[in-house]
Length: 116
Image 1 (cartoon, rainbow, N blue to C red):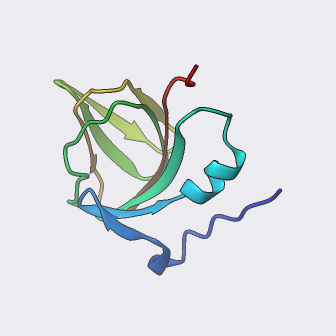
Image 2 (image 1 turned 60 degrees about the vertical axis):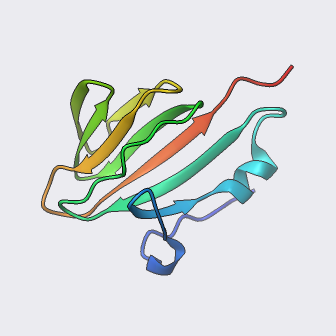
């Protein structure tokens, strides 16, 4: 089954965590592994904007599609460039900021251990 990602469709992004996010919950509910809480989204961040500091119980993987980002996980700050990936363990406080002068987009994927 093929799905298309259309980054040009601004109205497909909704405000969440202080930035604009497009979730793929419906897609993953159909295709994700059984008994696993799995989700994904693409986030769009303008220059000078940041995702609100937050935490959640699931592990999250961030893939930077374009631009430069600054990611803070607990007390550690890391710079990301296009194509970089970072994994954030569950319950870690984190925040993503646009570190450049152009809008950035990143995919986020999150999951929990399968229920037994």
